[in-house]
Image (cartoon, rainbow, N blue to C red; front, side, top):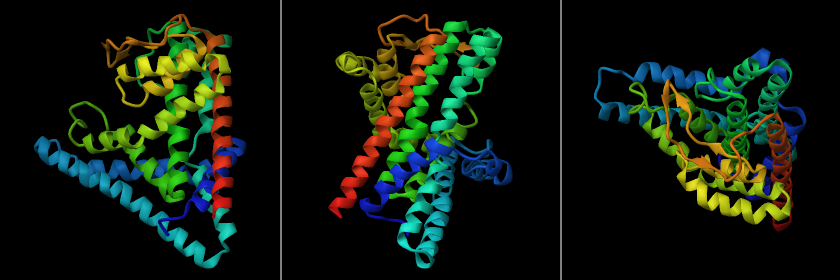
Length: 329
């Protein structure tokens, strides 16, 4: 089964969010069978190895990248739909709703994002700058070897804001629309973008389709993520946060990341984004926000508290929508 009514998909999304917030992805399960994103990544790696030939023209590599993306989406989504179809013939619908929610929860990252960002603050507070640089290097793609404490804290806050959108709001948004197949579809595209959607000689042509589609499907979630962060802040800040989003989000290098980052920057009264180094080259990215660039561990901890409240806002919204959907059905 590929398409479900909202009276099913909305409860699936709400339950998935609650399950993942409560339990995360169990470590024993990770050690035993890996993670669904790892399985998708293995498929992407294999297709890239076979199809992305550097001795062909850019036009051919763009076409093959489109073919690869089609397979990256079609294979997992078709398998998911087939398994659900079998499940609904063997098990009662309420049981399958819980099964969908449990499986969809594996594609959400509330707990793991909290753990990784909190580790940066803990490292800075207790083990110094070098430990903070090492911890933040696990969650950002920029050069971290020369970052000072403020830059480490800013990088962690930017990752927190962006991944709140990409890792939590977006998979739940697509789950709310299409159930588990929607979550799988989103994760396939997002994982492909993270692996092959880079502007370097190897991936510029082959990964173009993945990068463009990822930008498109993250548009609604990035706006929703900014709204959740704004609602999680004190009410007297809402006007300031909204004005900052409207002013600064369009100037971000990403069509999506600027929205939650601007909301985070305004809520914490700090500057985010700005110049940073990738591959030894400094960018000239503009600053987002209107506060100070001197972020520290305390600001990172405030950001984590804001993030937790934003997750609560999101889950509450999903629960209300689910109840409304079930009543309407």
